[in-house]
Length: 113
Image (cartoon, rainbow, N blue to C red; front, top):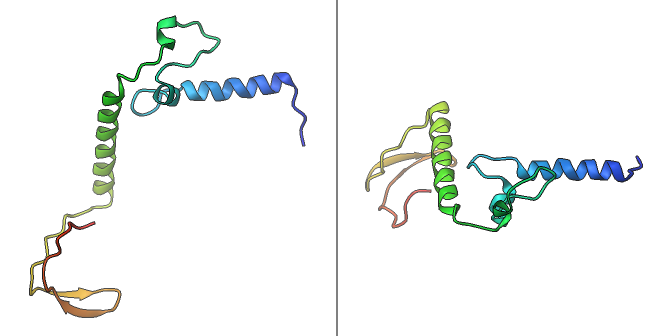
């Protein structure tokens, strides 16, 4: 097992700290989302930036929703996903797992998954 001295530990700590300050998809770092402020590091920052503030949460949620919609659209396009028509009562269907034919009895109350 390698031996670590204080310089190695400090170096590893700074790498982790740098990762936590790295801006992710919605435009904020994980630390900003968790603590509501920027992390204090060796780089000088204004003390106002270190005061917790979660006013940007609605913006983060909106950006995350846009990101997820774009990801879904790209996935659907890539895999040629088609919206299926709703099944009607008395319609004949083939059940793949049991390899048999059946008839739709009635529409279920809950939507499709």
